[in-house]
Length: 75
Image (tube, rainbow, N blue to C red; front, side, top):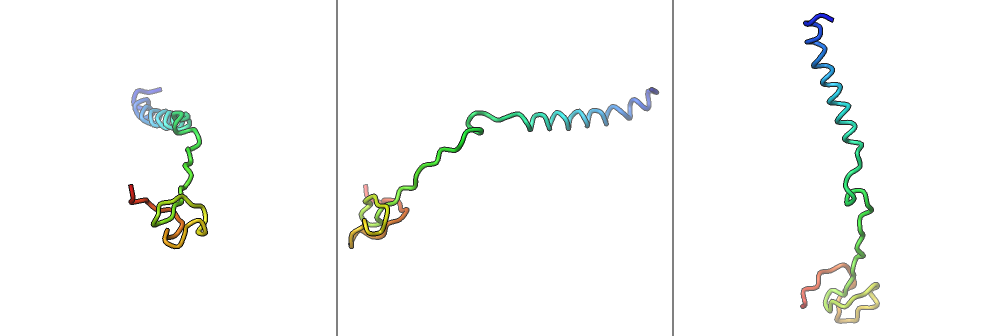
């Protein structure tokens, strides 16, 4: 192979090798934190006024508000 032809071929080979290396790295599994199933925390429903835990509206009394996903502002 002539030196001029070799100079034209090297950048193309380097590009192909770079693409192959990038593809191989993309297939490497991630850390354990990324590959495990995410921990699902259950949604906590409370009565809006009393902050009492509930699962249905009937568990909240007349003055306790509505049952739903709320942030309790009472300490």
